[in-house]
Amino acid sequence: MFKKILVATDGSSHAQSAIDVASDLAEKYDAELVLLHVLQRNVSDSLRHMAEVEYGANLGVGGNARSEAALYEAVTDIGRRILERGRDIAQEKGLKAVRMLTVEGDAAHQIIDTAAHEGSDLIVMGSRGLSDLKGLLMGSVSHKVSQLAKCTCITVK
Image 1: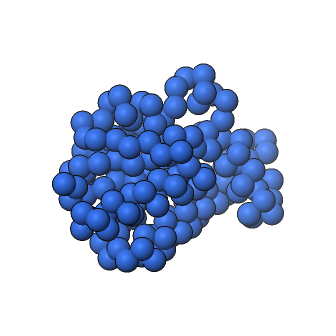
Image 2 (image 1 turned 90 degrees about the horizontal axis):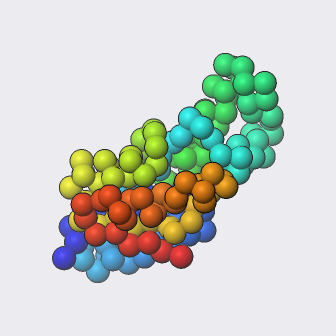
Image 3 (image 1 turned 135 degrees about the vertical axis):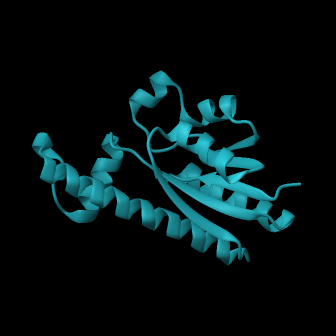
């Protein structure tokens, strides 16, 4: 039924649940699993805090180019580790066909574009991620993706 499953992850608990569900489906249907992390230039407060805790520095105070570059480097590294954790979970479930992708931009549009480019049959994502209050007011990424994607979408809690 499914040949390629795209799972979007931001490291949140709902995204971890999405990886579990997507891994189970990929194993059942012998499908390729593609893990996607979307980097954003406008970093949410929760992700900025995570980067500051992880790197022990105040990344981005004053908005100067050096601090913004350090913040972006930290967020990129965190994204890589999020994907590696997802890959490890999938491989522990016995999956061999697991790829990791990182793209930059608006999360909803990048998920949709990546799914189309990859020829994904299914998108799996968490119902809530690490976004801030702005996400609640403007609509969630999962809602946008489920409305605009051309393939089947599963939203996991």
